[in-house]
Length: 219
Image 1 (tube, rainbow, N blue to C red):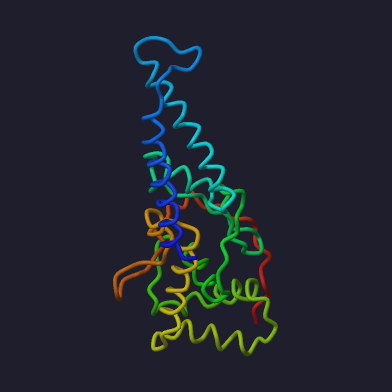
Image 2: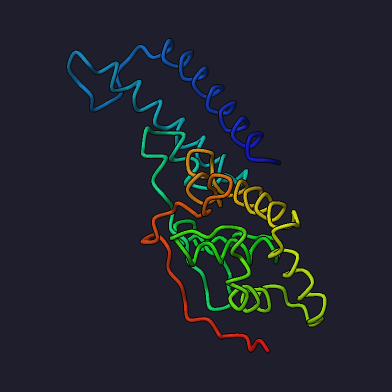
């Protein structure tokens, strides 16, 4: 299920619950024990609605919807506030605000994402070869490949300004992130920038933490 279908499913559930709430409110006639005053009926209705929200939230969790998404749908909140990212020593990308859910990407796309995450100042695609050592070090760790010649060919294509590999992997980064972030947040995590200008990831780096990384030995 892609992000758009996922969001539509949530919105549909909320719409159904809202309809149920509308009919339920029409049936409320007597105040609940303990309530009093002229607004007792409204308090009873509020209590009924809260119970529906609790039940709906529980069902959404059973369906695999993250708590963060449920909170966004149930209140105004600041849906543009970034989520934290933590990168482990072996380049696993985790979301601490979601019990360390791991963001999965293809190795070459992940290598590109991590390079740009390291460099908030931005990098032009034509200058990727200036970061050759970093790219090799990251790719050696995340790929798990032992065929150095094949690895070298993949990275050389990524750094070649005449090859479209970098744009393909940039798109793969965005597609992977789209499985974890709603549209209101996604723009802060993707590699973006005008043609010919430095590309970067807009995320405030105060939301990013790194473990020490065992450095791969690149000859």
